[in-house]
Image 1 (cartoon, rainbow, N blue to C red):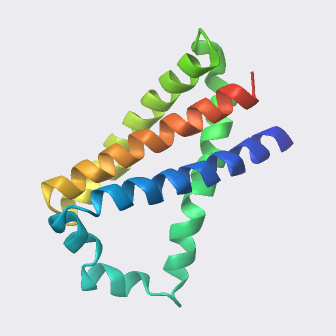
Image 2 (cartoon, one colour):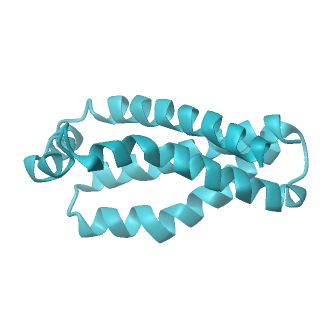
Length: 138
């Protein structure tokens, strides 16, 4: 259990860093930047709100869940650690995309480019997490 939590926290930190990087890259596009700075969304996640804490804790919670899933499914992935991690990340990434990210983005009336940025971010974060687990928990 200690290994699951430790690798989950490390993966969560890496996912948070990837999230900031991808958000910064896509923030260069005016429409995405406008969507990210939408007052109706920003006011819901204000600096003193409990939702801000949830936004920053989310990658760590997700990292621990992904780490537990890695422990249950690592025997399904073969090859070098990078390949195993990428495959795990792609599988988990597509699962989270179809269950959470895409429906939430469509309901939120974001622009298509913003939805693409959310999809790219979710896939990259899950692949980074998968590689982290593959390297740490062989």
